[in-house]
Length: 319
Image (cartoon, rainbow, N blue to C red; front, top):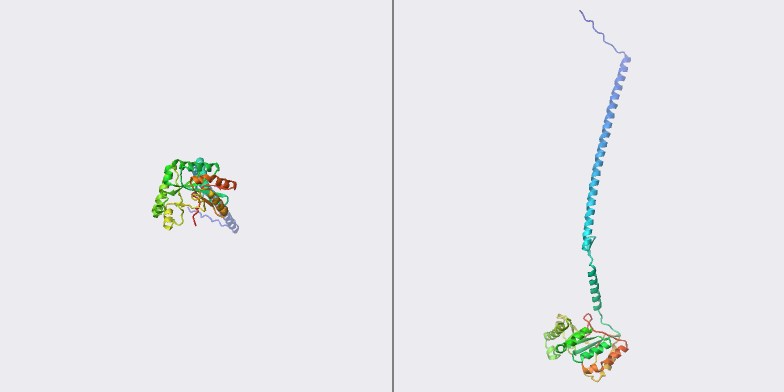
C-alpha cells in the first residue's frame, strides 16, 4: 500500500512577518528578565559589601575606642602615682614639691641666710673692735655694752682666752662677734714665716671652736696688716680662708690712758661719717673701760648704731 506524501505548509509573507515579530518580542522579554535578575543580584552584592565594610569600620572604631580608653586609664593611673609621690608630670618635666615640714625648713634657711648676708654700712653705724683680750676687765666691758645696746667684735689672744674661757662664752652668748689675734703678739715670732703666722691663728681659732662651738675665720694681724702681711703671708692666709681685718679709726687708747682717746675717736668719726665704714680700734684694758661709757654715750646721743662685724662683710684694711 502506498503512503500518501504529506504536503508542506507554506507560510505567506504576512505569516513570516508575524512570526519574526513574535520571536523578537520573546527575545526582548528574555533579555529584560535576565537584566533585571543581574541588577538585583548586583545591588544585593553591593549591599552585602557595604554591610561588611560598615561592620569592619564599626569593629575598628570599637578597637580604637578601647585603645583610647586603655591609654586614658594608664594616664590616670600614672597621674595618681605621680600625685602620691608628690610629683607633677607636665611637659615631660618632674616638679618635686616639698612636704609641709620641708617647706618650713627651706623658708627658715632662706631667712637665716638673708640675715647673715649683712653688708658693711656707712653713715650712722659704728663697728667697735677690741684687741688683746680677754682680760678680767672684759666682763665689765660686756656689761657696759649691754647697757647701751651695743655689739662689738673681739680679736683675742689664745693664752688670754685659755685663762678666761667663761668670758669668751659670754661674748658669744650675748651676740658679739669673736675673732683671733694670734698667740704670742711678738713680731719676731708671729711674722717669722707665713707658716708661723698661720699656725698661731689656727691655734687661737681652734680654742674658740672647742670652747664655744663657733668656727671663726676673722683675724686681726698683730700691729696691723701693713707692713707685715706681704704677698706670701697674704697667700698663706687666703689658703686658710682667713679674713684679715684692720681699722680706720685708731683710738690709741693703749697710749692715751687718761681718757684723751675719746676725743681722738670722736674727731675721726666725724671726719669719716658718710664716707667710709667706721671701724674703731680699742683694747680690753682698765684705762679703756674707765672712759668707755663717755664714748658710748656720744654714739648714742648722735644717733649711731653700734654693730658687730661678720664674715660676709668685705674687710677694711690699712692703706
